[in-house]
Image (tube, rainbow, N blue to C red; front, side):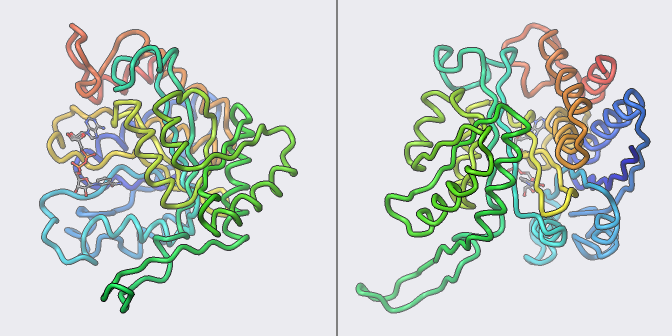
Length: 357
Ligand code: NAD
């Protein structure tokens, strides 16, 4: 297979971690007989410095011409005082909307080797957990009508949530498809006891569930889901939910793994092209020091192989290589915990993973 991938290195540790993930992708392609081509593009502060725009048109065009996109991170103190539309972070919304991405996939996996990093007690974490949150990204209350008006108690602000059957169906389908690629278990999270949008959400999900008889389907209210995530996270395989509920639950799920440098994400639209990126930021405090943990970006690259190219074996190989390296006790500084060994640098960790592949 031929893989054409746009690389958006961005700012801070972005270049280090994207180069690591690209090296892992190159090795994986070699091992499995694929040909891979990378197109580097500017984004964020680096793009602003060179072109005056955080998301130059050339970057958007190159991303649209590629099969998929790998992003590091953007932003840093150097660009903090720029006006809103020139700030590096603005490029993130811009590239997501230019690529038509409405599904956000955020896996939260705690492997046994990193059990002590979780803030949850050992008896709750057990042998670890591996769940995926599928969040609707372009609808709901974050995009609804909003403003100020005269209310019963004087001036009030309001935000509105609206979801169409079409929007619910497309995110629902993405979640059922993701569940089919995993342990075939899907929990839809809503607030159908209160919200009309949630009642439509639930009705639409139930209709979709009929099309996926192999997937074990359940509903859960969002308040209960927030509790269940810290009470027994291993009960979940895939969770699908609206934009705002997903925003909150995915941060909660990341937190219970305890290690921000390990968590990948994918944003997908109608086609197979996606945007894959770690959930962390550009970590300006350690930028350029070869200290960053590249694993979140490497796991994002594995998600790309699975979701954009349908290359599950190749994705499994990367994920197993990461697990083996962690099982062998290798750690970067952010996940060193109380280990007596010296932490690996970003490039040493990358090399270990490549050797394992
Ligand atoms: P951050 O995620 O960059 O850093 C938080 C802490 O985690 C820091 O101590 C950092 O050193 C550490 N950390 C993060 N990733 C790491 C890694 N891979 N390895 C080791 N340690 C890691 O969040 P922040 O400090 O709030 O933000 C810094 C900049 O990143 C800001 O300009 C912010 O706007 C931007 N940001 C960008 C994105 C993105 O590009 N998607 C997301 C969040 C924040």
